[in-house]
Image 1 (cartoon, rainbow, N blue to C red):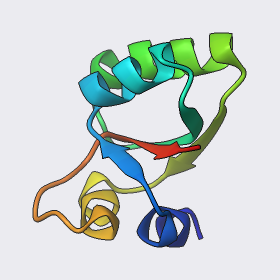
Image 2: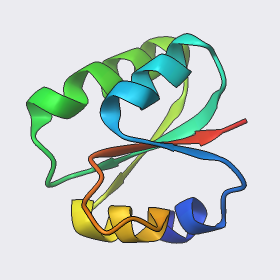
Image 3: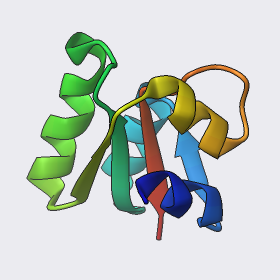
Amino acid sequence: MSYDKVSQAQSIIIGTKQTVKALKRDSVKEIVVAKDADPALTASVTKLAQEKGVDILVVDSMKKLGKACGIEVGAAAVAIML
């Protein structure tokens, strides 16, 4: 279901660094984080999302999340924009 949200979203940001930047700009509706991603990578994203009150969806696979974004590699975090 969350993969569908990502693939159907009008505007997304892919990657942890870009997601953090978007969160700081207060332009994120919700984030999607892959459960199999390195927690060291996703910790800053999830912490900031919690501080900002942004919903966090967790999916099983980085590879599937990347595919839902239309890229050939895995994605640890994706922001669905407002």
